[in-house]
Amino acid sequence: MRLVVLSDSHRAKRKLDSIVQKHLTDADMFIFLGDGEADFDEILTYNPSIKYERVSGNCDWDSVYPTFKILDNIAGKRILITHGHPFQVKHGYTVIEEYAKKIGADIVLFGHTHIQYIQNEFENGFYMMNPGSAANGEYGMVDIEKSGVMLIECRI
Image (cartoon, rainbow, N blue to C red; front, side):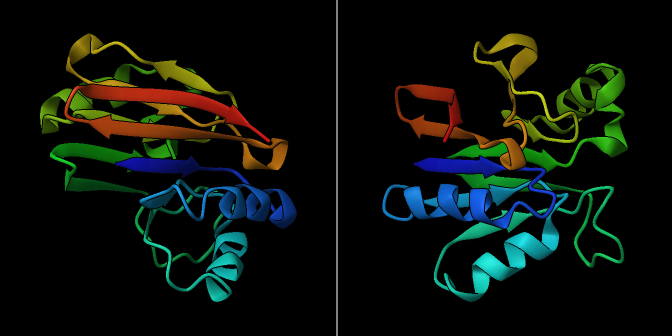
């Protein structure tokens, strides 16, 4: 299973759209981690059949979406998705790591810092990724196979 992970588009709809269009045929699911909710909404209007999950960011005013979510049984994995601000990721990863351990997450996906980050080894009992900022052309992919999980930093 391939997940394309997006975050922080901040009105850079063309870059966000470029990423989505590039992966329409190879992504099983898109995961949007917030701060660009209106951008993602617009992309969904002309790509209504894509499978996705999403959360809101600190700049998504009046959002109806949660700031974090637990996805169970995505290719047999438990995935925590969040923008990151509820877990203070700009000040380190301790809070989000403790929560991930508490809920038994296999994979943690977060944004907010605009800095790509991958913990590709199964450290602390889970994998962790920040895809960076889609406004800068950055995104991530998570490939989940029977043989394991691979997190990949990408850029258009």
